[in-house]
Image 1: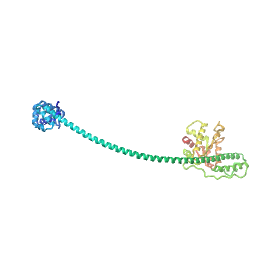
Image 2: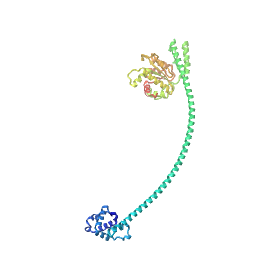
Image 3: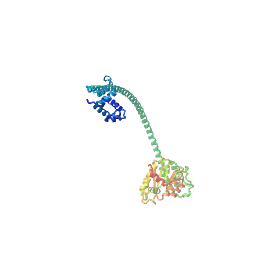
Image 4: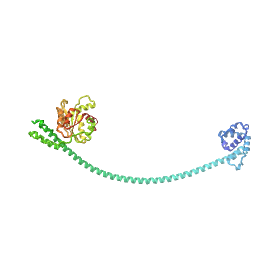
Length: 416
């Protein structure tokens, strides 16, 4: 066994104290740095230097022993006893020193074993506590799962009961909705039939009036039409009979309703006017100056070509959708002037004789529009045109004007 500085560290510390007590001139040259060191403990370099000096200098060992005054071997701890033997160098000192150092190692091993045993006991206790905690948490989790499962099953049962109830109520509401839808469709069919009869009687009245020898000057006042289609039909029956038989008495004039006015602040040139017609207005009669509307649609879209059949088809489709989906389910008369529509199919107007929109292809659209407005005087009529002259003529019969610019804006942004 070769000795290391740490084996005789006590001897090295005593040698250091002895050297520091010597005058500088008496300190061996290799140990002067050790004497001048200010560290409280030996550094590894200083320990190796002192070990080599003591190992090779018997006089230095003796001087260190004399300065130290070591305890007896029997009363010293193993490390101190090994250091004393290292300095004394008695017979068989190495084997004795190894024995003391072996005791140190054995004591250290015993201490380590005891430390490990304590650590084992602590770990076993920790494992026991963890097992207990795990078991407790498992029981808590199982109980919580049982409770939550019970709640979920209760909620599921209530949800199923609610679903059955809602399905039953939905079925009832569906049957009720079907009933009222049928009733509403029947009502609209009745109204459409009344409108059809109204249009037929109005045509008969117009033809009879043109054949009569009586002039318009003989009439005491404008002919008024009730908002009620059935009442209007009865009135037109009287008018046709009057013109056909040449009676001297005028037909009884229906009572006029309050004149139609736009909501306060509504600009008839803006899209807001058409939005009002679509979303809010009650049932109206919309009389459209077709050529004027087509022209302003091209102007709005910056199209330089003249309006063609495709343009008219687009506008009439938009108007069909407007009256179909509007709140008031309005009626539309769409007039085209043969003076501007050269080469148009004479049967063009027939394709628009639907429940919602009627197309007219006439020689003078302005006069035809004024004639219809006059025939509907007292009813809620809106004329869509930007022709000021036409608008003024229609206004004399109580019609309200919406500009074609407003219609063009609405068609560009319409939801239908």
